[in-house]
Length: 357
Image 1 (cartoon, rainbow, N blue to C red):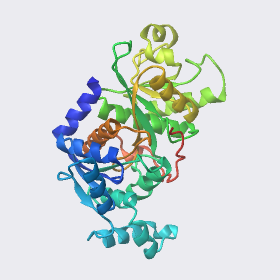
Image 2 (image 1 turned 90 degrees about the vertical axis):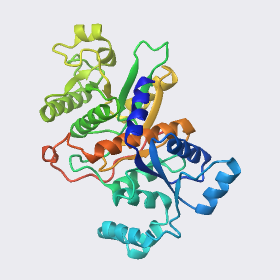
Image 3 (image 1 turned 45 degrees about the vertical axis):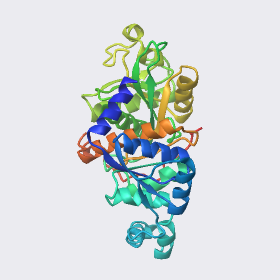
């Protein structure tokens, strides 16, 4: 998996501190220890210290390279509670409620990211997508350039039987159920940035539809074409085709016949699905029928990285997401790909988490 190897090597070149909060799960402990041993990340683990150490002892897991933090006895807990209260009091949260909330390892972990004690967070092996995304949005916050947080999968096509080789970005496949044209354009811009960060190549974006270049007339097609038009206005340098069918997005010969003036030319590395139905079905089809490896769902549009895991994830999956989060954290330090003045709106703090199997 050349693209994934590049991500791991990029992480190793400048490791960042990543916080996890599900140390009562052996998969999370094993992945965290491996990430630390292979020096792709500096790992902090938040949770019940006694329970984590007991599990590690029972499983023969060496925690000597992991920083353990228990909100119940941490010297920072009260300061974190005050920060949470200051952040959420306008929404009705009291200081006592904040003191209770901060004892939740997920909340504590995201406060570490917000306050600079960690560079990114990873959760979801046990917690739901709704929990992970809500905490990330409310505590870490949305980039000023965006109105919503969306998701993507890093799809790896590296087996000998794959005619198409390398990595692809699929978005949005897990969060935004039925994006408007403006929201779809944001998803496309965020996914293009994700491709540049993680695939380490220039993004080539296909705005997918059941229509190619106006071959069908329908409101769903109009949404995709409007979204593509807005992306072109905001990112005129970006290679993007839309509306475009999947075959024309990925097969050069078909693109040459069907997409006049194509800038992607059937060589897309970013596939933008028109809604969550299509995105969720698409990535699972590629994974289960096509044999692709799906890494994610990963989040985009946050001020600092916080990533979700599937509750069916393996130790290898968690390790890979830690590596991705490190690379995102590296990019977040010098983010300058979008001028916040180019998209003027207050952040939306309630996307619709859904679609994760």
